[in-house]
Amino acid sequence: MYSNDARLYYKYRSVYIHIGVGFSVVCSGLKVMLELNLTYYAEFNCKQIRFNTILLSKHTHNMNNSIYILNPAYFLRNDVRRAVIGTYDYPEMPSGMYDRNIYYLIHPITAQMLSFFDGTRNLQENLGLISDFFDIDILDCEKIIDKYINNPETLCIKFEDDYILLPKMVLIECSEAKRTENYTPEEFEVNGDIDLKTTRLYRPLKAIIELNFSCHTDCCYCYADRKNIKAKELVPTEKILDFIDEIHKERIPSIEVNGGEVLMHPNIHEILIKMSQLGYRPFISTKIPLSDAQLCFLKSIGIKNIQISIDSLNEDVLIKTLKVKNGYLHRLMQTMDMLDAMQFNWQVNVVLHKLNVSVDCELSPLLTFLSKYKNLVSIKINPLGYSMYKDSQMFYEFKASVEDIENAKTFVSKFAQEIKHIDFVFAEYICQSDYEQTNKLDKFHRRSICSANQKGFVVLPNGEVTICEELYWNPYFIIGDITKQTISDIWNSKKAKSLFYMDQNMVSTHSVCKTCKTFIECRYHQGVCWKMVTMAYGVNSWDYPDPLCPNAPFPNTRYYY
Image (cartoon, rainbow, N blue to C red; front, side, top):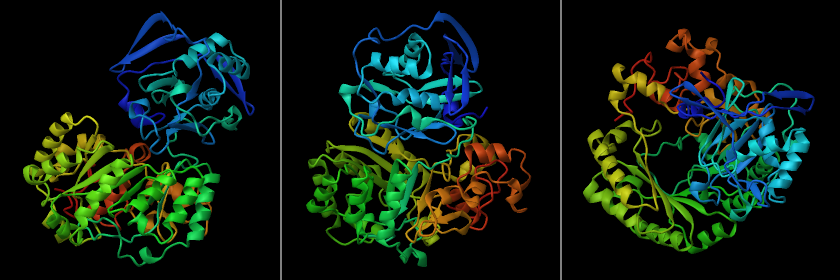
């Protein structure tokens, strides 16, 4: 069963709620009929059990003067033939008050209902307006809206043959937060049939701008294609500013700026100010020790989320792996002190390799040191990965053993239990044993969903557009150029669509995908990680299967642990 946002359906397939209320509505001439159904349904292990109880309100105060708003962590978006609800990048909201990093396809009617909750009216007034707008009984309105008020868990709603997901805490009391963007129900009118099945968005939600590939360090594990001659070609700043304007006009809610070191771009202040003026608060990731003046500037334009990369408290290790100079560690520690004192919501990224994997000598002192910071919100630990753009011998020289990584993972898990104010994330990694036939099938079905070319795009420093920030200038994945095309032209280009909805006829005879009977199911619904494919089989074998596929050949390159 693959329906609306299949990956999340599977996550919540063990328990779901079926809620429906009967009414008719006309949206731009489209008449939508929903069946009257005020009965709870629950599914446990895919077996439906019916509860013969009347849907009762969980709120005794629904008809009072309380003011509820659409959670400020969420945005709504018209996506041509449906609507989208998603999370803004790093909203100023406690983590328990919203679902992070989500976007769900929803029925336009749901978006229209939620659009009324802008904080200007109390609940009773909104119910009256919704009742009038849809021409349905106000009590039915209450029963629908009641499910969205302070809902503690993700909602899974069955609509005909599709499953619609809504995040937790959809509507919250206005006293807890304020919205910066509001909507009207007319924004979500749809012409034509409703589409809750296709996963590629009709309009992108995210733009990643790789501003430059200049760096303060020369990391032994760098995965970027920095030596490519195109990496030295930078789009004029004026064009970047125009492009940011276009992003805003297209109502794309999320912009990321990456590098290289974005703070080394010659006009980074001008670019960040422009983004700030339009309401964007990009996440900044850096390895540069920052000055007080730099941090004051970032805070003055509303940026609060910064990631610092630090792999060790041993400067000799940093000098060998990052090619930095003496004094780097001291200046980086000063930066972290200032970040905490200035109350940034900052994060730390650690790359784990042979020289820093020791628990006693390296990892324990580092995490103990970091745990003293009050405003450090998360620490992510990434085992060193293979780079196609570095000497492969260097990877073998610095990669840690599987045993050492597992020991580190166990330590981090125990350490995290003692440190409650920091979120610890230990990234997944691939072992040679994962490619053995007996282990492949389970790994393949549990693989991550590839979102490349599904919800956003990546602009390279020279203006060319690719579908993934780790595919760089691989010609198979270039879908446009911001110096020559509009966002709409790029996103709707034949190349972009053909990559996502890949025709099996496009596959070479060298690939087992050419004759695979589950090609459509695999490619359209979960996809394959093209970065992993090209790492495993080479850049010209882009149409090969995911290396974890049971039918895939064993990787040609040894990038695993």
